[in-house]
Image: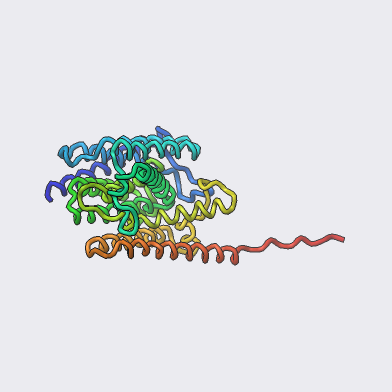
Length: 362
């Protein structure tokens, strides 16, 4: 345990040092975010958090004992996402290019690392049935890749307020680490806590509080896509393997808010005839802001709910609550989110001023 604590402290301090260093060179690299009509932050903010977190995590995992190091297939997949994310932060790439790169990274993570969702829960397929049927195995591989790409974009889309994506990711990593600890999976425990420490080091510069009214750095697409893919990887890892596992639907509780919000956004955009990746202010955090909450309070509400939902997954795992019940229970956050979106849209329509009628002349 003291050795683990030392590695966590190293990860935190590495992230802090790298954020401070990259904060100075980010403007020279063109990695800055300027306020626009859609981005209401103040001043020019360095977008270097993702690069700093990735570098800190890679250095941190390289100094671990070999059995505890992250696989190179996983590191390589994250490197693809961070590189493309940094290019997007700099050049604003087209959505199709980003999606292709994310798919390549997900395929590399699944195919090269041999990672595939294994435990779908007692209500669905079991691992032995999947392994015995090549068609089912191929289908599960496709579902795994889609899940990685989907969660990668979910955390990218939720990154709209200071501390929001980092806070939601920290919550997910914390609960996944506790579940890995409960299962006795040493490699995952170390990797999850290491990445959590790195994220907390970044949040020291990204969170708003009483003494700092705005973030000093942003994580950018490089950071949000990296964190989304990493959380997807660990969820897949904890649901598969010869060691004790947690059913995949139960693990979804730790990331249910970004997932549901992203699916809701895409459905609403497609319903209005727009691209599912087009920018707007229909995100959950925008709808909460319109209710009058401050940026810090909105972040607190969403991160607090993420912590609550992650606790449900952990408690359910520890006390062996029926995975069927926890799977059906996922409909609760879906219903709450849908009801809130519906009432918010209805409220916005009622409050929207009607255009004055034009008077006829003569």
